[in-house]
Image 1 (cartoon, one colour):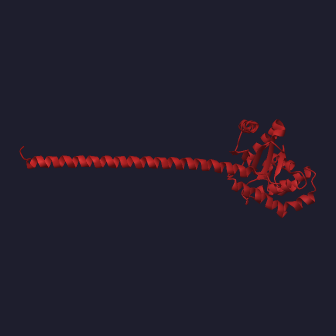
Image 2 (cartoon, rainbow, N blue to C red; image 1 turned 90 degrees about the horizontal axis):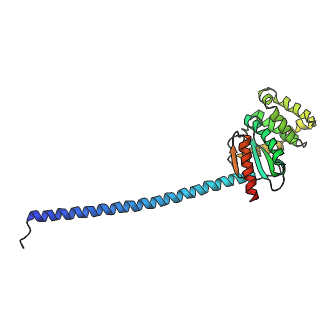
Image 3 (tube, one colour; image 1 turned 45 degrees about the horizontal axis):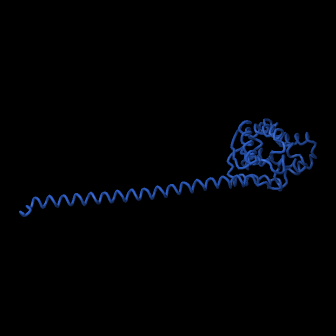
Length: 242
């Protein structure tokens, strides 16, 4: 057999180098695919974990918001009820619009729901704080919900008057409260602390606006219609019956 010429040797060398380069590229591609798959699995795991964490956080938030304390103002069923916790501001127009809807639900659902009121507003809002103190002071004479209703019914006057204190005294008089006690109770430290505690619990429960409602584990923010809220309550009742 004739010896290979230099040209033939060079061609073989080039072919070998091309084949080796192709093999290296395939290995790199395979490695990249492997890394990609590993990263995909990691990202998927993180996404699932974050999703579960967010779901857990939402459940914990709702649970915190629904813990009723002895100082809370509640009305309705005492046991086996759907809990409706409202974070409200007596100056808030959407809160005033919510008030008659909740009153209607009291009639419709009677022994099936329990409503809790909590104050929530900026602490430097003097009128909102004064109105909250008035409701709490009336509560010390067993007329919290009556004052609660009157304040919402007179909200327009409350927000427009330059003398909100006079309006609240007038409302207290309509409820036949002891006015001297009422005036004194308005400045009680226990009432101020109760309101601040409501606000702090609201922040811990991730409340950001009023009205915010927690209907069992469902959080609802802002203005809601009668139909929207009724649907959530009925769903909560169905879940309880399971």
